[in-house]
Length: 78
Image (cartoon, rainbow, N blue to C red; front, side):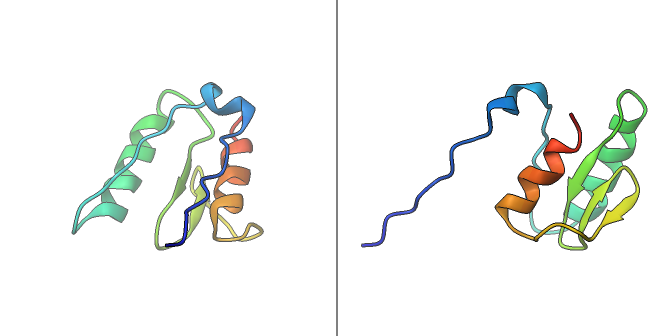
């Protein structure tokens, strides 16, 4: 059996508010709606979907599409 190594969260993890969206249909649309709602009270808002990663409404293309890229995107919100 292969064991799964879970990365240690960054030290600054408590400085950010996160929302997870799960389900079968409508995750990308729901994520966009949540990001728009959050943007009315705080910026920048980061989101990652199957379409790509965004900082506010700008598509982020300079990060890898993996855990490290996700963490780097979150760090840009600090």
